[in-house]
Each structure stands twice: as structure tokens, then as C-alpha cells.
Image (tube, rainbow, N blue to C red; front, side):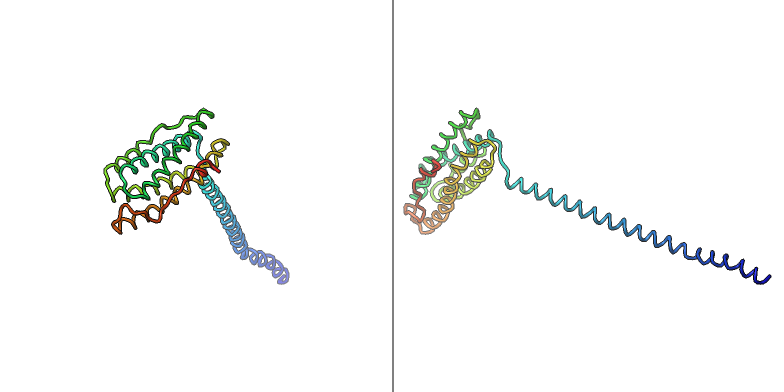
Length: 234
């Protein structure tokens, strides 16, 4: 009898033993599931991060390599050219410094030529150019009109740097245009405009040196030469 009682107790003890491990098995399963979920979430986060990074990189590249619509380019380029001519004529009237006057004469010749070619391009492609400077450009010209002597020379030279930086940026955008005639025109004129920017920066230094010496009629280091060949894209 005792042997039978002992045999009955063994399955019961075995079941009790197994039951004691059940919570541990569940806990381990839950831990494994949580770890898998954590790894999946981490992987998803990295995937989203990479997608966002790639998207931002493409957006930045598009911004850097951006372009401009043909009509917008023709309007802005012709308006800038008209503004340069007006200010250069003003410089010939107001400045007594040789460097400033030579630079101004170069601006008149080069921008008149470029605007003539731009007008022909616009007529050929059905676009419309601006016949005069924008209101903002006219406002800046009005400010310069109020200045005299050294004050005018300094202001004009600094303005030319800013103006040509904007123009160079405009033409660089146009070199990416899908319109072949706009692209070719921008590529042909860009070297001349970059040269103008170099001259303008040199003019700022020249004006400072000459006026610091008190000799307004002297010729400084700035000595612009004809840029006819560059304006023609040669």
C-alpha cells in the first residue's frame, strides 16, 4: 500500500515541479518578444533616419543645383543690366576718380551689349524683357544720387560688389536651364560677369586707398580693360 501511495505522489510532484517553471518560461518568452520588438523598432528608426537623410541631401542638392524659369531669368537679367547702366552713367557724372570712371564706362559698354543680345533672344523665344530697373534697384540708385565725392565713390564701389554677386548667382542658375538658348546665353555671359565682380572688389580697395591718401583724381591699382571679347562670349 505504501508503495502504491508513493507511486501516486510521484506524478503529482512532477507536475508541481513543471508548474513551478511555467512562469519562468512565460517570462523568458515575453523577454524575447520584447527584445525582438525593440530591435525591430530600432531598425525602423534607422531606416526612417536614412530616408530622411537621403531626402534632405537630395533637397539640398536640388537647391544648390537649382535653376530658374526662362521668363523670370530674362526679366531679372534685363532689369539688372538696365540698373547697371543707369548707375554707371551716374558715376560718370559724379565721380572725379579715374578708377571709378573707367569701371563705370566698362559697365555701360558691356551691359548695353548684353541687354541688346538679351532683347534679341527674348524676341526669338517669345519672352518679355524689362525695359528698366526694378523699384528696389531704383531706390538704391536714388540713395546714391544723394551722395557726393568720396561718399559716392565708396557707396558705388560697395554696391557694385553686391549687385554683381547677385547677377553672377542669377546667371549660374540659368546655366542649368532646360531651355537651350537661355542656357547658352548664360554660359556665354557668365565669365564677363565674374570678371566684373573681380573688378568691383578691386575697386573697393582702390577707392579706399586713394581716398585715404587724399588724392581723388589719382589712378589706383584698379585698371579695367575692355571686356568686349568676354561680353561676346569668346
